[in-house]
Amino acid sequence: MPFPDTISEVFDLARQDGERDESMFYGPYNILLNYLFPFEEKYMVVPQYKRPAEMKSVVFTTIFLVMRNQHPVFFVEVKSSGSIRSPYL
Image (cartoon, rainbow, N blue to C red; front, side, top):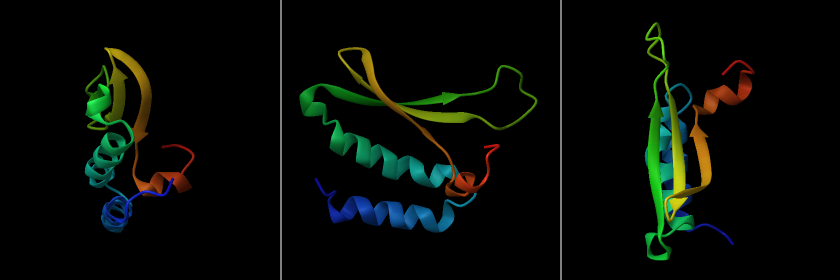
């Protein structure tokens, strides 16, 4: 099942600045997950922002959680496109 062109386009736009800034991908992932898991079928996409327990760093993790009937069915952790090249991110 190919994705609509608009989904590919928003990821292409995010990729331009997403090398270091994963927040550029929040919108595209939200669009993609809502397309794959429509609310008409009782799915809900819930962004989760997990900050570290110790606030020594400003780094935190963003996870998009997909739920149905209050049960998690899928999740994706959003990282910058540059993190693919680094085993430590």
